[in-house]
Length: 296
Image (cartoon, rainbow, N blue to C red; front, side, top):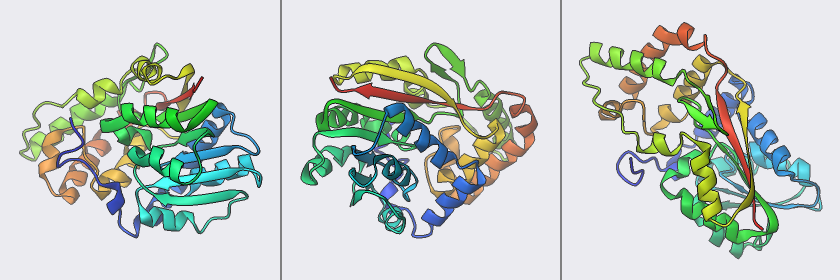
């Protein structure tokens, strides 16, 4: 499924109230954004005095964590397409030199170059990379171009509502449970669910595919780890429904639901979740994949 069509979501159009909702999500779901960014900073080896670019900085959770790691000698460039999110990020306190710039992931090379961040030590992207589906090959090349030799590109692959093969092992095998219940609920509401479009799911289903893309972009020393989210499978679905799906993001579970108004769509998805929550939670916690690659 191409994200350039009508079902794509324009992150620059997030409403002014969304940053507060984003922060409530973090608080309600185990500080998931904070914990995920902390883990990426650790696995990337970001330390005092580093120069770092944060792609998809949001309201500043990841930027705060990076700033504490790099300290006053460090420099940080926080990039996000949403002016509302960056406005909230500017309200935080950062113990380092920091610059905020509005822009998309596809603009990271030009933004970094024009702000003196070419040759940086690291580029980090937490809970953003998944939404670059339509241009992630070019994103890898752009990041490679702004890193210094030995610099690290660290991101998490946040596909946690469907099966994901991480370093040869399959995680998140509960996804089809929800989809089966959602199909049944949709049918009760007179909606013909049709077939799922698997193009995006297939490309995000195996970290070996991602590793091959990183290698093609010129990266080496690629490390992949499975990281468990601080929530149950049913909570992971609620987290998604309470967040981006409620604000207009595309629905990949059943494309037919995209024909409904957002409120009706979310109501049906919540109904299915209520029906199968206990079954979902008989599975282990959902995992995401953290990837770190080096520019040689």
